[in-house]
Image (spheres, rainbow, N blue to C red):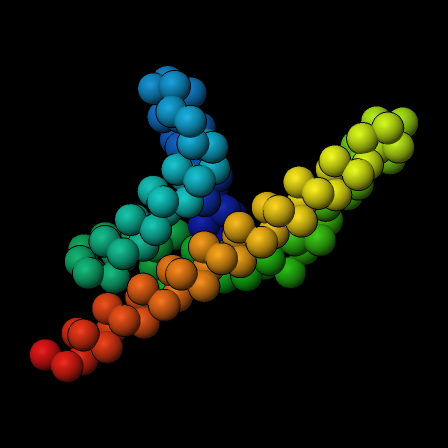
Length: 127
């Protein structure tokens, strides 16, 4: 479990290093997740890579343990919001509008992605 957590954090660290080192406009944790996805896909494709934390669903078990306690990660953000209540009071309407717009854009992007993937899968099944 500890080695699996270490692998997850190592991927995040490498992602942070790549994002910072190359000046990419992409968050380091996102690059780390992509790296972890590539590692897990390679592990599933090539059995030679299934050793250490990649063996016996170790990474999956560690990530499920993290997901159980995901709500704890919102505590620092909540404290930050409470510390900036004066800013919230002065710019509250603008913040609410931006949040509503970003939710709508996210939902639209999700729907479009789902429809595209669904269409691609139907085309692949027809072959």
